[in-house]
Image 1 (cartoon, rainbow, N blue to C red):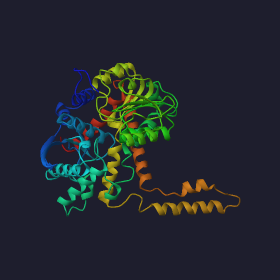
Image 2: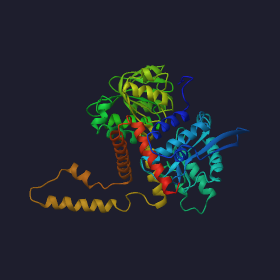
Image 3: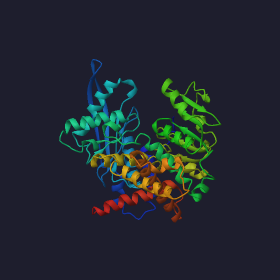
Image 4: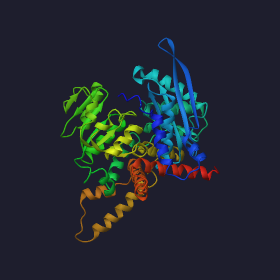
Length: 472
């Protein structure tokens, strides 16, 4: 999706939004600059012998803020990767981690590559060599810098990186904590794959618990039957759409992908569409809706909620004035440019910002990191004891003459919380508490009129407090 020539870059948009917030704060210019700037960015070019020749690849790892350590942020594989992008994403990670109160600074990494061009064994060689370059400089380390999956990467790549770290640090007992987003059998945690999309769902649910915020968006009622457009059905978009439609009763009326879009006013079956994409490589030919080769006009259809869940800059000055939604929830990083943000706010569109909306991933990554450091699965110590206590209560109640509890109630009540239930509970608590902090900030100040500025204020103040504690 192209954008106008006068559109600020992703990094410039991030700084414009940051500056809009800090103007409302009583911080010294020096502290503002310290929070704003990126501490360091490492660029590496390395060669890998593949297909009978040496191929050179360029990668980055940016550290935005070390007000807390380790720093945290994903590694993406995409041809669009460049220094400005990773530095902007690292800054967003700083603010995101502070907002949801995970004890990390912000970092981000990327490799300029199209992973679809390489066979799995070739991609493993490339990933391991990139990891080697970062590990030997402590840019991957359980105590200093902990990557995670991002666009173009997933559990497989994280497992390769973790194994590479272990090969280079054979006596590090905490080596599994060097990355998060790993497969379960490699030290991962239940619920991590779905985490960002699940976080979007919890964010939406919490928004609909705040009547004053719903009023700002001219929305009423519950999520049920709300008409939603999803841009991008990757990991985040798929899980968000699946949970919102299957569990909350929302209607996904349009899905946009790289090869076009599918619409259905009665709602798209997300599982069927995802299966079709995995089978054919795109949305074309899906029989559960109408196919549109040109997806751009579809994002401008009238709807209640728009979920941009793909690349940054999807909503920009070129199309912002034609967007017909009441609420945007930014499931991707930076999907609304600063220029479009202003246009939409002037139109009365409410935007739930990315630094909050897609924080589910880093939240569950935090849980995985803690699991790796503690060397024990969540729920292992207490689950059966909890079930035994509940069983005693059931037996006591049923011993009372004439009292019988239904089998379905007993089954649910006697089920002790395992790792997945605990992860989801912790994620929901985090998303609810973080939104409440944002909403409180929004409604406690006359000079704050939107959720993004409120989120920045909460986050920046927390980062500032950390620096003050360090004596800065």
